[in-house]
Image (cartoon, rainbow, N blue to C red; front, side, top):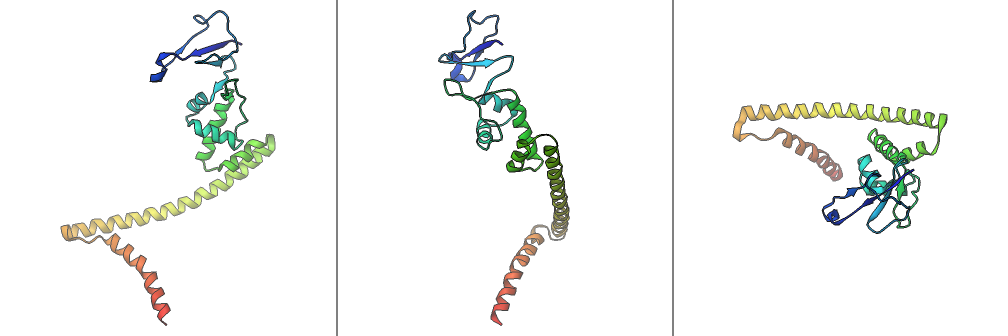
Length: 192
């Protein structure tokens, strides 16, 4: 294993840095963290939190939050207090984000990550079945909503074609009547 310091120099203020390869790095490398340096574990790729976040496409706060929620194992810290992770943390963060994208909650993801083997597979199967049912239900609602929007669009186009500048938006009129109808019915009911 070779440790290569990442030197931060004057260009740090503009967010750039120099990487030193084993060809141009000092002959004697140590594990000591010098001021302005961070160590990168090359063969095992020990990475700081910012690098994990960048590679996984999330914010540093997201990585911290996942660690706090125990979705990521607690990262060891350097003497300087920096969290360091193995490369598998990138894949784990990406898995968590992808699982969220398909509709799993962080609690559900945590349950999946806590087990292994057949139990994990059974839980994933059950969760996916539930998520598919939820998506199917949402799709039915979205189709109904789309039909409503198409109907409103046609009403607007018809009104604009017939009335031009004098048009009254039929959608606004319908929504106003729909909103007021239940209230009017309640007022009428309370007067009895």
